Image (cartoon, rainbow, N blue to C red; front, top):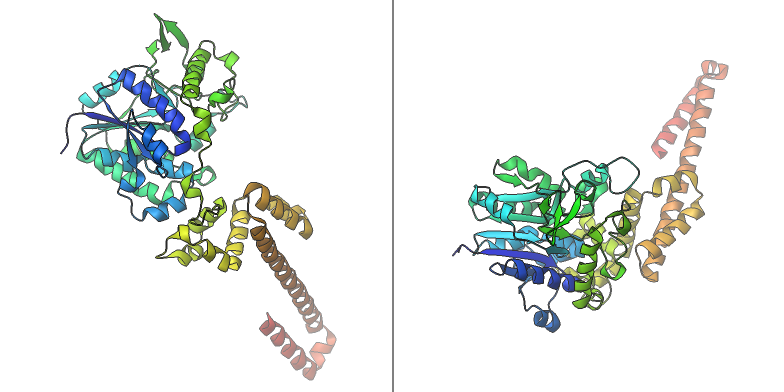
Length: 450
């Protein structure tokens, strides 16, 4: 049964719990009447349950996910956490009239009056763009292309009113994110966020909220002028409603965000106090302690680490995925090893297709350099165990040998064909029928050999 109350939720793994608590404290102070939830994209333990005092915990197993084990393996923690957003919203819409999502690295400063008005005016979905004005092409990051690749609208906030249209768009989004919540900007995908660009076309009652106090972050500081008025933070005269600390590390508070190089703290006069206050709150909530938590779905059931590249070949290669049909893939570390030739070939193919350095390497480098480069990538970028490095390099050697043998055969066939062409044009060919028959037979044998 739906009631008239509002629910606000975030999605987080255990290592984010320090900042989740800061978000929830801000919500309790500003909107104590809202029910607060955290959807856990991880496995719960006694400490997490004990710390979930100011909000209610929703375990991801409670969500309506088809084959949840497969989904947990398909995605890394960043992809999986983002994929759970529409699932969490649909779960809460079963009993709430309005549901708001906020990223865990957000702090709420004021009531969301403009959001409430949008709902009262009949809108069923509210989203915010990254910015209201373009960035300069000055070599700094982010720029307009960066924002365009990541998505016009920021997935750190959305809000829905309970109605048939909102459930329809959330179900559409959920279906897309079940298999396509990928962090692959070069392929036109950035987790949940790029899909949001299609939302406004579904209805005129999708509201794009451009208020300067919502979702303030490093990506829009260029056109939101800060000022403190009567003890309150304002941007372009609008009161600060919530600030998004994306990419900010409270333990390194002199860096605004690891995702940008456009500003230092000295460049954002007044705003540095907002960062400093937030950092203090995070440290008070044991930020450093929580960041040491490991992600439960990063390991097989036997405790061994799941190489991230295994997730990628699993979802990109149907031959690999087929090995685990009907099985709990987290219990199948041995199946990967038993099929190491197939896995090694899939890893090599994946790196060749996706690594930005691969094409240049093959064009301008010797065979031995290929093996050295592959070995370094497997160890340093994909952090594979030595047994896997050796197995993959062994298969790479086999591929190189086969490639060289085919090249040699093709060269021999080309030489034979050139010889045939020279003979066919000679006087001997024209006057000697037995010779012509013989050469024709040789040519047939050559083509059969090919």
